[in-house]
Length: 297
Ligand code: CAA
Image 1 (tube, rainbow, N blue to C red):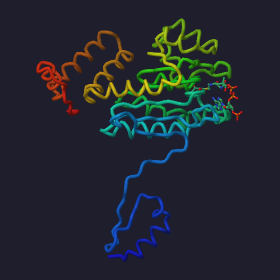
Image 2 (image 1 turned 135 degrees about the vertical axis):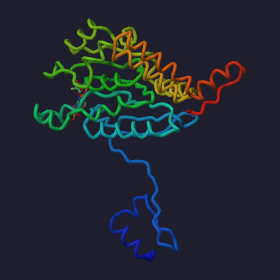
Image 3 (image 1 turned 30 degrees about the vertical axis):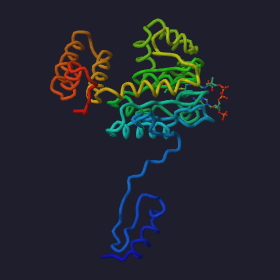
Image 4 (image 1 turned 90 degrees about the horizontal axis):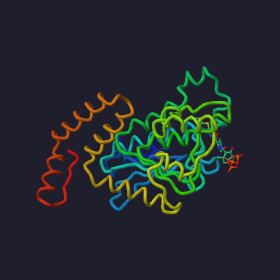
């Protein structure tokens, strides 16, 4: 067995001992690994809500209006995946700051991209980590949600906005088109004519108009937005996580298929809920006039 001093020397040499993630146990020299929260440079994460069951991701490049550089998106993808895998988290909220949710993909970073480099490197591919999440994701949008920022909001399941939010797909102004779902998701939210107007002009629309169009579910005073969004996540968190996941899958299927196939898909998931203990508990609790105690089972 190695001595405590020898193990300590090795770990110090590898800069591990100061990381807070490992410790040498006294007497034995055994090494204990701790799982530390990952450190991020472009986002901040925090678990919030009375039960700490809401995963909050705040985009944090304020000087660049939260422009979505690759490093930021890799971090968002990692945070979303971690929250998705964490049984204590019921829903995820993505937000920015008062000036910007996100002003789009990082124009400075992509300025010198070529068609070949985009293909080779799978430009924007990491965004799929957000759309693959099984748990509900809610966007809390204050300020600009432009280009990729609007697309990121639309990747989420519900969009809440502050009353000064501005949405738009201004890629046309810089000689390109939306590349992370803007031309596909926007018409599904607001219909073809309005989507065409937004994509072909590059004009911004305000929060009230976005709500009228159905892009945004609700609008709140700027300072109330995050609090109200977290409340929504907590409300979702009172239900069975398993059934919430199935409900999300069913609604999303409406955008993937025709009505007949979608209804069939819904029916099979609905029947599927009858194979869960949470469905049994939900109906039993209703009949016994008490609150259900869901077990995610
Ligand atoms: N990429 C990189 N940097 C950006 C950025 C972006 N998308 N948007 C803003 N910034 C930077 C600015 O360059 C500026 O940096 P410097 O201080 O170093 O010059 C800083 O953020 C502040 O921006 P402004 O001075 O322009 O702020 P403003 O209040 O005058 O204007 C704005 C705000 C109207 C949002 C303006 O910044 C703007 O038009 N931004 C670009 C919006 C855009 O075209 N988005 C689409 C990007 S392409 C895309 O997203 C493709 C896709 O589909 C994935």
